[in-house]
Length: 264
Image (cartoon, rainbow, N blue to C red):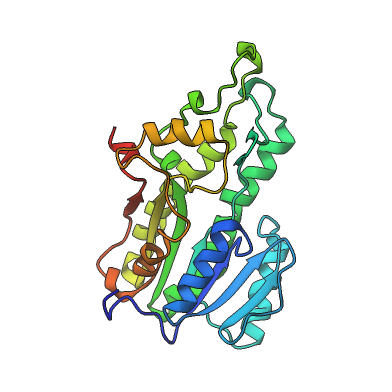
């Protein structure tokens, strides 16, 4: 990274910081010199040395977000960078897609919860921390999108041989809706606070290899020009770039790291 891609003297808040990618965002930001507040609904270790603060909060709950903001303000913590990472995803494990739900039968309660975490939670955090950034004349908001922010899921990736058509596993609609909506939220905020020094961008990621079903991995690789899924360590520097002054002229934009999948 060039000297511009450094974050000394800044505090970054990462939602979903205890998750698979969340932990990598935290590590990358700390590696670039930032103080990091890792927020998650699941318990986290109290700290991993200097520069890390962990907070328990359900960002889908407006009261929890307000209390989080109040605790940080009371302790003199200024959030310079907000990373909207928290989401609920139906992941693919060694046995295939976990948490599949076909559109026709997706429970309303599940829709509401997953949209609340991935989209409403991002809105609430932007509402809690963005105005103070605008008042200071400086701030960065990065939302974590997906290739599914740009294209529909290819449900052929999840098919199971021998299963009836109506029983085939599919990626639930919620994840695609949330990740697409984050694109709209990003553009809105980038223009809303453009004159107040707040930049907002979307980082769109392809799938990461992590011990998934081998058939699924092969199917995905066949749809990616680079011929493979991403490694877990390939995204951190892109986030640091977006959060740093190296991206000072970049706002309302989408940075895509998907191995070329959406080019086809």
